[in-house]
Image: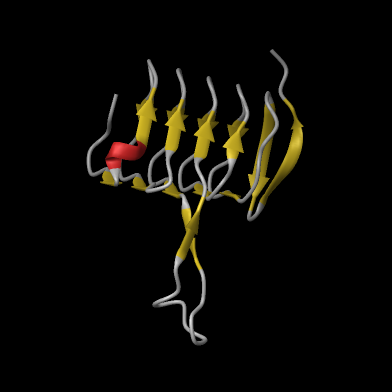
Length: 125
């Protein structure tokens, strides 16, 4: 299920599983690959960027990009305004609090929050 006003840059690099929900206003810049496994829920205005810029002659404008795939594992939930950056994996059944920034891997069945996001606790069944 897809909300309105979603931006997909390099959509040929996105793999989407079954029963996925992507809310209004999400932005995907995923030239290095994005895997969204089954039953993932993505809240409104989330951002996904698989590339980072390097500097050339003290400027980020013309530096080459460096990127890695993002993976959203089965049953995970990302709250509104979450930003997921290059090379991050969200573990199975994990929840990411709204307004968080993911810069590395998140364990399965866990809650993460903050900017950058940090582990808060394990989630009970």
